[in-house]
Amino acid sequence: MIIHVLFIALALYTTPTLSLLKDPCARIATKPNESHSYDDVKACFLSTPFNASAAMNTLVTLKDIFKDIYVFTDQSKEPVKEGFDYTPLDILNVLDTFLDKKKYITDFEFNKDLRSTIKKLRDGHTEFQPGCYLNDVLFDQQIYLYSIVSNGKQIIKVFDDTVDGRNVDCEVTHINTKPALQVVKEFARTQLSTSRDLGVRFNDALASVRWAEITPTSNQFSVRNELPESESITYSLKCPNQKPFQLVRKWNITTNFFLGWSNEKTFQQYCFSTDFVAGSRESKNVVNSPPLTYGEAKQVYFGAANAYILGKDLGIIEIGTFSFKRSHDSFGYEYQGAFQELVKRKVKKVVIDFSNNPGGLLKFSIFLGGLIIPSEHFIFPTDLRVPPIIQQAIRSESQPESDGGFYQASSRNSFETEKPFTSADQFIGNRNLTRGGTTNRYSALINDQLPDLLLKIIKDQRTSPIQFPWTNDSIIILTNGHCGSACALVTQFFAEIGQYRTATVGGFLGQPLSFSSYPGGQILDDGILGDINAPNKFESNKRLTFTIREAYSLKNLNEVLEFQYRPSNYRLYYDEQSARDISLLWKQAADFLR
Image (cartoon, rainbow, N blue to C red):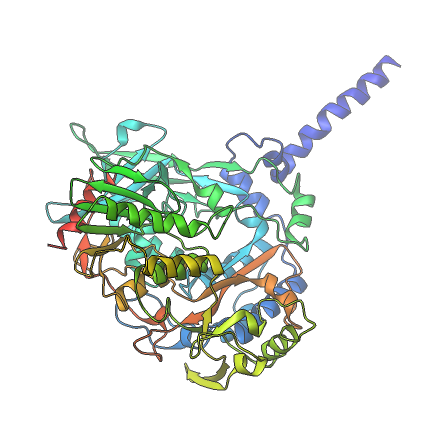
């Protein structure tokens, strides 16, 4: 009897252990607060076999979106404008033949290749996200790189090392035996899709600090949410007063505390669940870092926009995002207040810093354009594709008895009249455009409607006793190129209509750099598919974000902003001090106004 009880106890004790030995997913799930083995994560990801039916469903949904809704499908096939770095892509043809090119064994390989293919569009709005292989696991080198120009030469250095601080500001001469600058450049070229400008993608690969954190839009070489190619990276370092040496750094691999799976079986179920349940990339990619300092700059206003002064004559407006967890139209007063504070301080020159601004709510971008520039239009006109299924959605949502939705005609203004469309037919328009050798139907030109409070603030400012006294000779826009979406629209509006000068920092020595990225008019995800009859939604844990509207130049209504190369007027480069003290960059940018 005693022996029998002992046997049961041993069995209960050893079964989980044997299970853990055989099941890499279980080994990960049972240790949420520990660093995980690269081999375990890779084995767990590869444990889900390829499912032909699920793959076909994914491809069908993607093809339908790119065929009828994605606004740049045709233009993505056209020759690349000088200054950009990407390859023209016929995405529909690629998706049609996707399964003909390779025999897949695992679900992971299929989704990895599909994600990589869609990245080649180099559209910062457009991303395929296979939920179970993205975001739940974070891969962190714990050594963060940046690029400086010293004595006329561009080099890679260590910005921060959370394992060994003695490596900070050592030069990185090689990565995995290849020249470090070349490795980071190639990573940006092939792995990142945040801009069509390679210099901007290069900046995004490296560490960049804002508000005492390395921003989630940057540092993508060192902190990743996708499985890296190998378990470690080898750095060749050259530090002051030391002989050059090699540092082999394994990935520090952590997971979300609450995972959607506990073993191989539940991981497979998680991969094929009908809802997209991946974690937040932005919250995962933020890492602690030495605080960014503002040097001699004094903050004089805090809000949706921050205001600083440097000396007597220089004022700075810092706008780091248009995305807020809790958004109120009253934030318009904060944008106005920041500029009015600089008026009260009697500054003569203004730097507006949009560096690392990923965009956000379009209404604040439009508002800012109207607040600062006395123009008839507050922002650029946009349109969207209107094939039969979208026309049907517009007509349905524009009916008097309809609850409305994204496609409701009266929720948009006509660009020509600046008044709401009065019918579905007005919104649909009659514009047939040929791009990339293909003719498709596009809507009438659209302007977004601003909330009444934001319109009131603009109107009041134009009659306010506190008028903005600066001209385009006394204002300069500063970015590191990652000024995306809503940020791109307002900075390009300032440059085109306000004729404000622009300066960019980083990128490649001696090469121009775009001052904004992905100015497509609006991002949506496949959740919009619920508003129309087709295409079908994804049947498994996946999501696609994509550009649904495109913006046009006001000076040339045939010019789509997304595909126009617009480099800054002036160039700046980081050094060891300015990468950490942003006031130095503000001073340098202001010097261009002399």
